[in-house]
Image 1 (cartoon, rainbow, N blue to C red):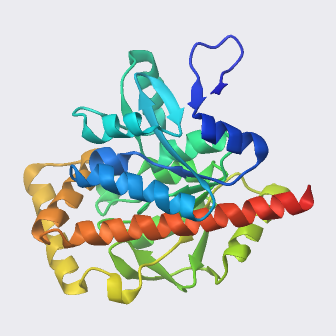
Image 2 (image 1 turned 90 degrees about the vertical axis):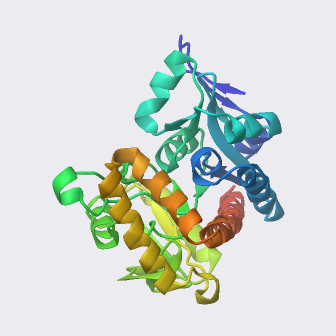
Length: 316
């Protein structure tokens, strides 16, 4: 299935399974592809990508990994497309602004949270699962560096299940930005905002939801009231027993931030640099935690999508 503007040359292509799910109102979970191309080392990235999709399927929802192949935006990558993005060098890290360029150049790209959200919302998908959001960087007061995720979520009606924002960022500034742009933040069975590798970033969330049905009803209310076009962020923390050791986390983060300054790493290269540093400095412990995070979020996102589809069916 293709979604094409009148007289347009460029289009979003839906895989057959996703197209059927969207057509019938079945639950779908959108998944980013930068976790495959930039977030995890090879060959674990391909294995984890497959496991993420299996986790979504186990909830009764359809996984829809999004990526750009030879300039074509694809929603619901098949096994060969997943392998290509996971194992090919030079795949672009594609935010929303990069998609038209990749389309025109017929290039490959892996979608970030921002571009995944934008594409998913454009085709009618309600829920997205990721590891952690991008946010305001620690030196943003001088560099003005903040993730495009924030701007996109402010204008995109989608639920994003995440483990908060990456602890390498300025967490309070990010929460302030989400508040000022009207993005709803719900803590799933928690009053604390998680810090990706850590169960608690040290900051509270304004609202708590203890049941998946509460989240589904919030999404329904958001759409029916039409008071905002922004996203709902569902913060899903790791259990304390499964988080990265806080002392190890703080030491590795300090070393990584020093490395950024020393090597002059800026912009969209910051997160991949710090994730790679965490992987090396923790001897793989951060990779284990990272994988646990995305699988837990995929499970919760699937259950939210199923619950939301149920409320929609009940009204039909």
